[in-house]
Figure 1 (cartoon, rainbow, N blue to C red):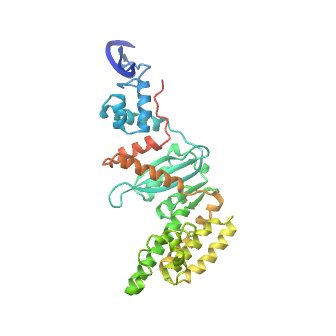
Figure 2: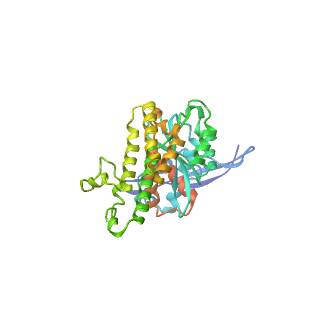
Figure 3: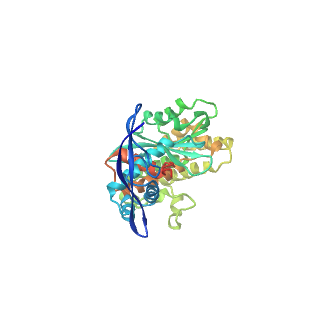
Length: 356
């Protein structure tokens, strides 16, 4: 190698006694036969970085705990100087990412824009430690999830024993096509099933209220949110209404019977319970409830897998709540890629700190 010249470079370092500290050095530029002219890499900073590695470590930790603007004010730098640190940290973290042994994988969609604008979020539940976002893809079609199974960071698919999701058919088709080993199982989340039943009860209420006369409507007036309560949490002022003769009250009682299904102790007990409940639901003459009953019967093996793996989508729902906080704190995102990188930064469990 031949030294062409030496270039004076400066790096911002952590403040010393509240004084701004700058490191200055003469860095050689060398000519290499294989790579051409290159700047020598200094040990205290990233290539072409304007800050020392120690400064960037502190900045990354600060931005993980607060907004970029707040971290910038604390560090005495501008937003335009702080953001590249964040973007470079995510790139480093994704490059260092390795497969993590998983107890389960949870799949859910997250609305991120107006109308039907979604991203698919895959949450990995490790054998030890906290769940983290393992993959984010645009849309909620089958292709959005298909891309996850072939990633090097996903690891061997035979190690994934359970995938928890709602009854969205594109996700199910993707999981069934990718996880072909005998131990793999798709589990439907109990929360989403009860959500379907709550919607059925509300549909029954609206249909019944539209057919009642003015005098009879008082029976259901102001009860929209009452039927969302479970039996244990029902306020005392509404206890009498649950035993009423209205069609809505009957639908609510069937919903509560369905909820008790998850108190069963094993697969066999749950299967017998839900088949008995299906007979009651299918003969109730309440079409919205019958529709949900047919859906549960169609997906019964995946519903019963809950009693083997005991995995729910609560991990994904918790992550979705944090995603909503991130979006609200940023006042929304116009750039989809920036949204993804911010989610990886805060929720991706990445090794992003520069090496000192």
